[in-house]
Image (tube, rainbow, N blue to C red; front, side, top):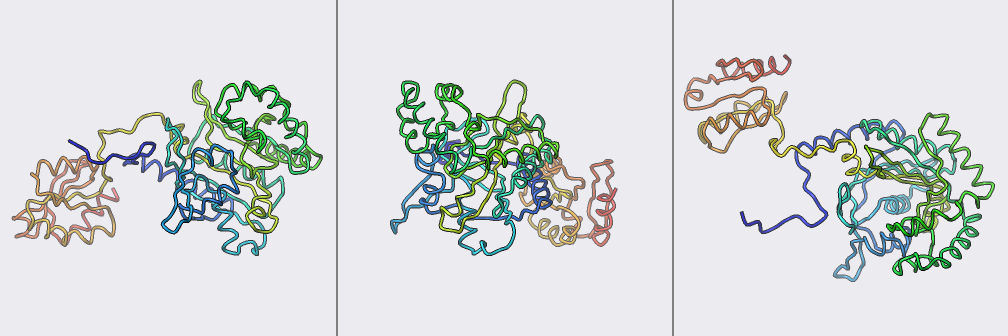
Amino acid sequence: MNLRYRRLKGTRDILLGEVEKLRWCEERWCEVLSRYGYGEIRTPVIEPTDLFLRSVGKGTDIVDKEMYTFETKGGESLTLRPEMTASVVRAYLENGLTRQPGTMKFYYIAPMFRHDRPQAGRYRQFHQVGVEALGSDSPVLDAEVIQTAMALFEAVGAKGVMVQVNSIGCPECRPAFLEDLKVFLKDNLDVIPESMQGRIDINPLRLYDAKDDGVNQLLATFKPITESLCQGCRDHHEVVLRTLESLGVPFVNDPALVRGLDYYCRTTFEITARSGRKQSSLAGGGRYDYLVEQCGGPATAAIGFSIGVERTLLHLDDKPFDAQRSPQSPVDVYVACADAAAQEYALVQTDALRAMCRVEIDTTGRSMKAQAKSANLRQAKIMLVVGEQEMQTGVIQFKNFANGEQKQVAGESLPAAVQEVMEG
C-alpha cells in the first residue's frame, strides 16, 4: 500500500487498548483531584507568544528551541502551548478570578506541544495532568500539593515513586547566590557549551536544566542553594519537610534540585520513578509567587505541578500494545445480517437494546462466517443472526457466547433475553 500521508514526527495515534488504559487513569485522577478540592479548567491550545516569553523566559530550552510559534495573517505571533501554568494564570486574570476569596484550585488533563527530540515516553505532542493552586503562600499548601501528586500516582498503581524536594529561595536571598553562581560558571566556561553560555547572565539557574553531562557534573561541585536561603525561606522549607514527614509522603530533601524556569521560587520538587536500573522523571512542580503579578495581576502566591502522562503510562506497563487485538471497541450484542434488507430490519428490532447494552449492527454485507469472526474479535457476549427467514417469522437466532447456547427468540422477547444474559 502506497500511503500518501503519515503522522508527523514526534506524534502518535492512540488506539484501543491504550485509549482504555488512558481513560481508566483519567477517571481515577479526576476522582482524586476532586477529593483534594480541584476543579477542571480547559484553556485554548494556542496562546499569544509573549505569554510564554514573559513567564517561562527567554534563554530556556522551551522558549529558545522547543516552542511551535507561527504568525497569523494579521501579523499576530501565536504559540501552541508548551506548558499549562502560564495559560492558567492568564485565564485566572482574564476571567476576574482574583476577586474570588480563598485559594483557587484548578486541574487539567491536556495536550502540550514542544519541538523536542522524540524518544520513549517523550513526544512533540504530549499530555500532562496537573494542578495550579493560587491564593495562598502557606508551606502547608506546598506539602498538600506534593501529597496530591503522589496520590495521583498511587491511584493508578505506580510503584517505586519518590519525591525530591528543595527550596530555591526568594528575591530577597537568591540574588546573592546567583552572583556567586555566575562567577563560578564564568571561571569554568571551557566546560560549558557556547550555545549555553548566554544563559549565565540572563538566569544561570537555567543551566541546571541543561541536557549536558559536563554541565551537570560541573554544577554538582558548586555549593547548594540552601546555604544561601534567608530565614523566611528556611522556615518555609522546614514546615514543608515536617508536614510531608507527618503525612507519610516518601521524600528526599535534595539541595541540588533546582528548576530553572523563570517563575519558580521557594519550594521546587520533582517526582521520579525507578524501574529496574532505570530512573526517570515523571512529574515536577513548584511555587511561583510572582508570576501572576508579572502577568499584570495583583501579587498572588501560587504553586502547581504537572505529570507527564505518556511517561507515567510507560512506567506503569512496559509491554507494547497488542496489535493482534481488534482496533475497535468491545460490544455486548453483535448482529450479523444477511443482506441490506436484514440490516434495515435489525436496526429497528434491536434499537431498544441500546438502552441496556452496547449493540453493533454489521452493515458490511460480508459472509456470515466473517461476521461471526468479527463478533468474537469485538468480545461480544451475544450474537444475533438476521436473514430472510427471521424477517418473515419475526423470530431471531440468538447465540450466548458464554455457554454456547443457541436458541430462537421472538422479537418482542429479545430485550428480556438479552437482559438475562447481561445480568448473568
